[in-house]
Structure formats: C-alpha cells, structure tokens
Image (tube, rainbow, N blue to C red; front, side, top):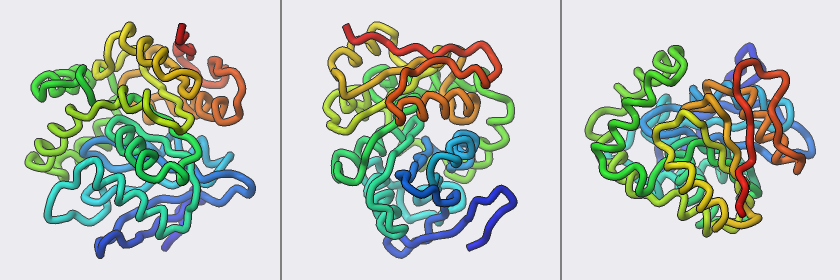
Length: 275
C-alpha cells in the first residue's frame, strides 16, 4: 500500500480470490465512512473530484469494482446483485461495519442492492443520476441517451472514460448494459427503508421526465429527498464536485439544501416537493 501526494492511500483487497483496487482518504474521528460506487463500464477515477471535497468530513473509499479499472478482470461479467455482493465483501475486508453509500449511474442500483441485502450496514444512501428502469428501455434507446449525454459532459471526462470503456470491452458492455436498463431503480427507491438522497441533473438525458420524478418523490415519502442540480448532466460527481459535495454534506448534517455560494457556475439546487 502506498500514499500519494494528496494524502490518499491506494491498496488492494481480495474478493473471492481476485484482487480489487481501492483508493482511501485519511480517517476522520467520529464520522461514518463514505463509500463511492462507480457507474457502468468505468472505474472509480471519475468519482475522485467529489470524494476529495468530502474527504475533510469523513474517510472516503473509492474502489474499482471487480472487472473495472485497476481491479482484476473475472472470467465472466458480474451483474448488479453480484457487484453488490462484491462491494459488501470489500467492506468486510476493510472492516467497515457501517457506511454511507454514494452511487452514480449503475452505482445507484448496486447501492440499493447492498442496502436491500444488508440494511444494517448502510446508514444512508446518496443516488446520483440513478440509471435503470422503464425510461432507459430498450437497449437502443439507452444507447441513444448515452450518445446524447456525451457532448453535455466535461471534455476532461473523455480522458477518464474512454480508456475504461475500451478495457471493459464490447461483450461485457452488452451483457451488463442490458441488465442495467431493466433494473427498476426509481421503483426500488420507493421501497428502500434506508434514508435516501437522490441527486439529478437537469441536463441528464438518462433521467425520466420531471412528472415521473415528482411521482416517485411523492410515493417515497419522508424517507427520500430529491434534489436537482440545474446545468448538470449524468456524471455530476465529475462535473459538479463542489455543488454535489455541498448537497451531500447538507443532507448528512440535516440542514436545508441550498445553492453552494463557493461553487462557480449557473447551477441551482432545488428540493422537489412530494405533494
């Protein structure tokens, strides 16, 4: 295990005999660890901007799930339940008994699966741009949505994403993306018993229409908060780290979610009503 110049450490743990790579910030006494869960076909690298901002309030863990990034490839593509199981094994190996999960895109259904199978392990869930469900079906439609999202993201995002997508490969991409589009993320939010914050971007083509988001928000009740960052596309963790970290920190502190005056740009944060 080595330490980089920013004070983060890097290391590996074994999950069913396979090394899994992770990045970890320094411990912050009296706080629960924040675990960041990456999206489809990509490593945890693009989650680091937000994780670095949040590192002052808690230990932040950013793993590359099995088969992604710097973690070893398996002989087959792990589905969402298997990835959730692997994440639990990572928490076991690092002796993290209770955590806050921050997922993006596919990382959202993975986080929901972890909370469903091991609810005592998860204090709170943050779902950033949750993917999956009717709005992303069928596969061709989801691919068009991804194509629309590309030009809306930061140009620097391509430098991170393209090598990861190439390494993940077309066969793995087809199998997992097909499963992801069938996963009812918003419906699972409604059934979750763990306090949940959903953060969506106004320019995210993978999100359902506002009326559907408001409907899910109403059905979820007081257990779920929905926040909107105007001007953000799908990879909010990379493009709007200051604003997103401010939203997450406010929610964890149980204070009103408002715009972050220290984050430049045109973004506003709104809490969507449930009635």
